[in-house]
Length: 599
Image (tube, rainbow, N blue to C red; front, side, top):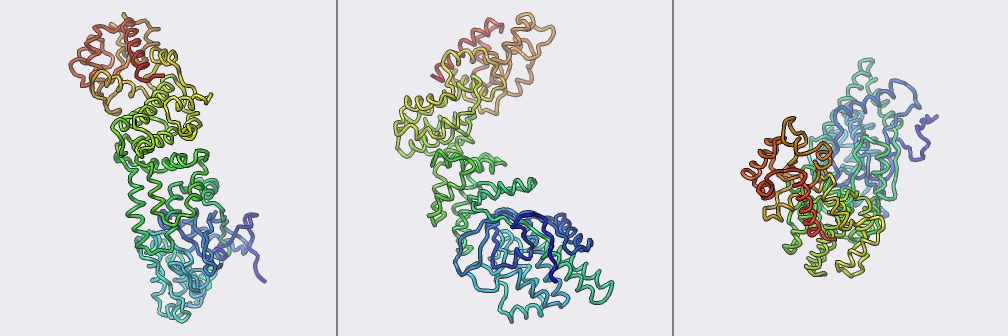
């Protein structure tokens, strides 16, 4: 009577390792997916879980390995079903390696029938297919040499090799890419050692018991270790499901999905073609996001796709971005064409994010882009900026018109930040702005389209002026930009944002006996300390050396030691710094700001 294994869930998709690999199907890890990485600790835990099934001696007891999420890819009718592994690579690969290790251990002890049964039922497809290998698990690029090495090790037994040759079922090597003694090989050897130890434990009890022990472990592995196999209709749903089920795992990103989708179009091509696509097209596109030695450039790479999608369709939600792209690419056979289209806005995006000068545009537009970078423009504004610059570079709108639009958008953003408005709401205004203009890209129409969003405030002159004069701006993100622009207005160089610190002329903590306490009341100090009129851009060295000093000392250092024009002019202009001079400078800065960033 057959033993009924107790299920751990009510899911109809709960399945055993046997059912996972014994059917007429192939699992494929995307070619450029991250390599298999379970370490010795993970394998030890897997072995302990398998041993527990033996130790408890409960025939219907099961162990739940977790979820495996796959996406069914279209195949030729004569081929086995083809599932791309969206998430669960570590589990499915480890189960496959355990089956290989069991077959090897059976073969080592001349239990060839058992080894051959595993090989035929779980490891290979026993008929001709159009796939690159007859293995039931097609690995990513980095693990293929390792799996090839394992199959070669398995076939090193003459008796076993003769069995598969007589059945005409020799393993068809995958293209030999990656490390042949990498993680897959090392974990296979660990599993071989584990099964060998169980064989020897059995033999120590009695001759012949070693083989029976192996068969017990074989039975528990294929029947009592279970997974939930989830087949998704849309690959973008896989990471969402997996992230909920396995919070400690690393879900696939939109960048992973884009890459896998592109390379799946070359699934039936030779490895040389796939590597050429990676080397000549994908890698140059991907590595371009690595500007200024940014170690976290993957984050920048990921952030590119949503603004890019919005340039194509402004109504798409972020969670649907990849699904939209996949539908757009459904009829495109050549991934090179797709990569080239993805790169259409890449230079503009990178210039906005990093402050580089990759975009082939007029000097005036280059300066405008750089200003958006320096002021820390939120990415919600990027889609419109990318479309304006692209239209100018492709001569769809005049350069001077594009420059005027960019200048007015800068004014809008600067005014909002100075007045303390959060960037929430900008996405709604800017994602569709290009389309809302309906071909009329005059500055007046752009302003009108933004202004029709009642929830997106455009501060008027009075509000902007008052905030320049009275709002504490020291810790506001845009203040280094304001001070750098003021330095440029005075005829000095515009300093790099990270090269200067912000100096409080009136110090935060005046010395007890200083002149500051005679010239400023406590209330005046509290209200004026962090306002723009009391701030100067200054080098770190000077800023640290003068800190709480009296103005007479600071003034000399401003004039004699500062490389920037603003502190030098400040020292020459103001012989003392009291509330009277503060008000004078506040008026001067507000007049300049109203002219520099017009309404």
